Length: 105
Image 1: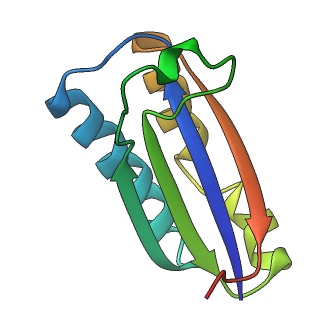
Image 2 (image 1 turned 45 degrees about the vertical axis):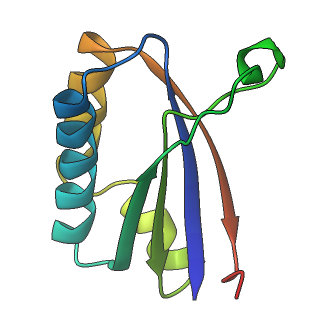
């Protein structure tokens, strides 16, 4: 099992409904690929003063689990994935940092 954990950081604050839709779109396209065994997403919980830290601060964390690195590589070519990314990037630009790792627990 391998997890793909993404730190998604939108350039500007998003309305809750927009963020919910982004997360639903990513979930749908990844689960529809048939490669993802589980999907989880959570909003970042801000704390006062964090904006002063020169780091990529998340808007949301997204994690999906796959059987292995081969499945992960195939997931990056899932039908519709790049259309979802392009759609959201054109409306609300964002950056993503990620880590591929074995389960943490």
